[in-house]
Image (cartoon, rainbow, N blue to C red; front, side):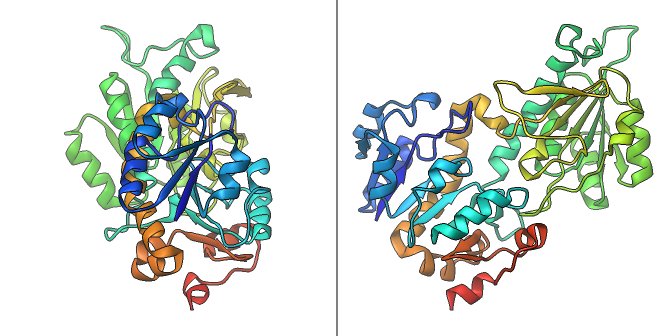
Length: 371
């Protein structure tokens, strides 16, 4: 199979879908890997690195799309890229379709088979292709939030760890999954007073155990969340419903109860965000203010640490990429129910229920299209 990897064109996105190591692995299985020139430069991989791994360098994205049987990317295809997709082609990347009707319509019109990293599952019920980027985004969240809290950057002027005689910043993390746990690890390490809110008692018990009482846990109710945000210096949104739009857990009215200069970091923004006032931003212009509250809503946070993120993502995606190339999408999905869970679009049909329900579009099951 010809596996293509174009350069990412989303603003300030420096990751790349295939590393030289992954290209070498694919070549060892007898596949041809086509890389757009300078695709890996933002993550520190040169064209020569790819050539040494057995890949072919092509000068333009047009040629990569035209010659490839499967396109492997990082971020959802932008409008110009969606026009290059064709019937029968496989697209393997993050899609996040639930809050993106334009992308969904374009992918349906393309006739391509689109498999989303974020809905591929594992035997433990986890999301193995989302987890590494969730780890990165979670660890970044307190870091970028603490920068925004500085007075010169518009924040309250609160130091995360405080100093003797002065209390630390209060950080509320909504969601105790992979993102929330990673964010808590860094926020606790910075010396903040951290409360994690979640609806899973077993998850809260787990976090209480692994943090040895260094953070507080709170069962999630509307009243509890409303009270906590009034006290917070920073609120990190870390809620995920696989494949679906994120629930709005903090309203515009609640924003007015927060401390002036407090910071919101919405890690769930690529699924629409979990604050009513959230809208996606980029690394070029990451922060905006609503009612005196700073919002950091960058939809590709891991792109800020592109080399680490690229290597972590490629380690997770490579086995699935090889399976798709070796077997074709149909047999690979039939053989692996976890990969099948990633199938979102095929030949003009939507094949993921949560996306259909979020966008009010008809959908069929992945099993139906496999039959």
